[in-house]
Image (tube, rainbow over all chains, first blue to last red):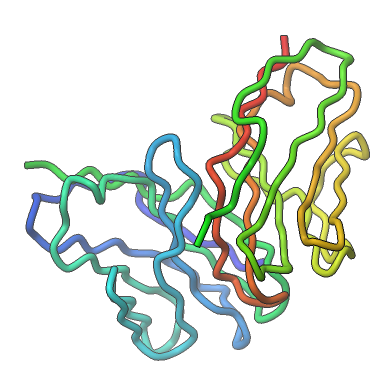
Length: 110
Length: 113
């Protein structure tokens, strides 16, 4: 499983965009980038995933570099409820096993 | 649509005992995975089931076992409990075998004394 590297923590002002980076330099061609978050005392929540192209859904946008060695999760207008641990995960195209790292603690402040 | 339901939510056991945790996936989901979360090790994959067959297993001792029933409900069992087994045990379901989009329950918090 490819390893990911994320900053330990980040702060963001409420209403501003939160940009969470992730390095995955050993990613293989058939591996996807997934993002999950875990709000305190809850189970992880799926946010978004992508292979090569940038992706957007109602929660966030995912920007993957052309060489696929890094990606950025963008929460366009962060709210206090977005305070959570955000996990960047590289996953092969088969199976449902997810390898979670330590993630990034995002603190949204008013 | 009801989410993933895990029971019990909280339980306390003593060393040497065994415990069974239950997971009811989202209706229509046939894949169930289990994860252990501890402050020291973070979230770690235990096993994954699809259509009653174990598809993948994490690096845990044989004291940890699981199964899936024909209605997709799943149970995991931990025998001969150790203090280090104290953790939040999370179950996740998915509609497909190779989805990556998992829906997690709120977990069962096990304390071993």
